[in-house]
Amino acid sequence: MKKIVLFISIVFIAMQGEAQFSKASLQASGLTCAMCSNAIYKALAVLPFVSEVKPDIKNSIFNITFKDNEAFSIDALQAAVEGAGFSVAKLQLTGQFNNIPIKNDQHTKIDGQVFHFVDVNDQQLSGEKTITIVDKKYVTNKDFKKFSNKTTMECFQTGLASSCCKIDGIVANTRIFHVTL
Image (cartoon, rainbow, N blue to C red):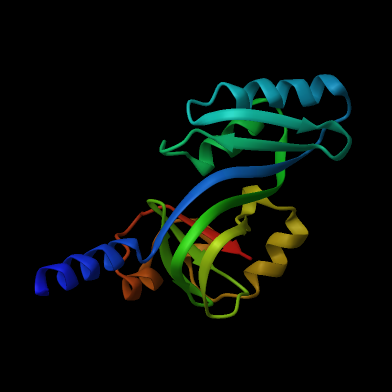
């Protein structure tokens, strides 16, 4: 009986704090025609972790589906758009969360990446949730300024772990993504 309880406890602990991002919604800025949209589509579609890209030309949005069980790169999405000659106005990631505790102005490791939650209520993320990246190259200047006033941590300006992150046990120069719900 002790073995069963121990096994169930281990499985429960292993399941706590898991998440898997499955898709993204990326709004680009600077598009003036269908050819612009096509350039971004092609740049996103060749990323090795992208399964599908569905453009919404009218709203300059690209709905991206990630390949199952394959690591993805937030910075690669931004770089692909920038490489096509445009910029990201908004990037949202959607995933399945299983009891991920988050706190305002704190760092949380999710799906192998470090996220700094800004302007959120302390809570547990469970089920399908969408987070919005609020780093400088992922939002408009107006939105960046709004969110930068919501934290005093140095990592918001640089995107890298700094002295503020030592509290959370983050290694120096780790890439940190600033997000909100």
